Image 1 (cartoon, one colour):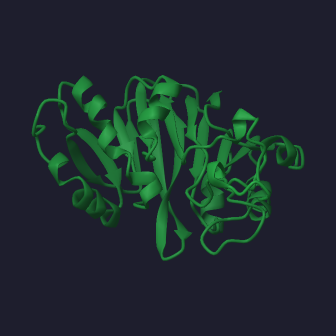
Image 2 (image 1 turned 90 degrees about the vertical axis):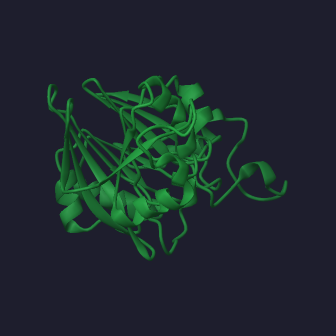
Length: 260
């Protein structure tokens, strides 16, 4: 299994417009330049894209993403859905066969509202995106393995958490972004993961996201070999704060690649 962190940031803070006296991350360090959160997972020969940030097109360039076989939308907030039009390139590469989109019914409705021109059997014009919408069930079998779905609280909505298990290697990867808590059921689902990714917005508490201290506690309960925190604001400095985390827990950064 190959995991590429395409974006590890959030819309909650943009360092480029900080006042010079504001406290924030060191912009001389490239690991502090974060686009909004998304991840690409290759499981066997299946290329799975999770979320499409507004920077999705540039993320594909920077990470040399050449194929997407299916797309999973964790929820319908702007920083996760507004790059979906740029999936058009992958539809075109599939000879304009509709790309399978998986999400919860309420989030698929938002896809229909934003991209009505893509909900069709064939593209409206050459090079246009074309989506086939699929409601998630408990799990999805793909050529390379299985993806299990669960729900996580995020303010007034429940986002989709993902657990990937690769058939050939037995490797397991859990991706829980944009959540305020991770319940006992979701912790149990993540047990045995080689890598776990958790929402860790900042050090201060937030009403819809886990803070870094909250995420560390969840990580220690799950007990994975390696946990990465994602969806961080500009207040989180990679070099400074990464050193302060317990062993086995690290900050993710844009372009980080992991092979299991």
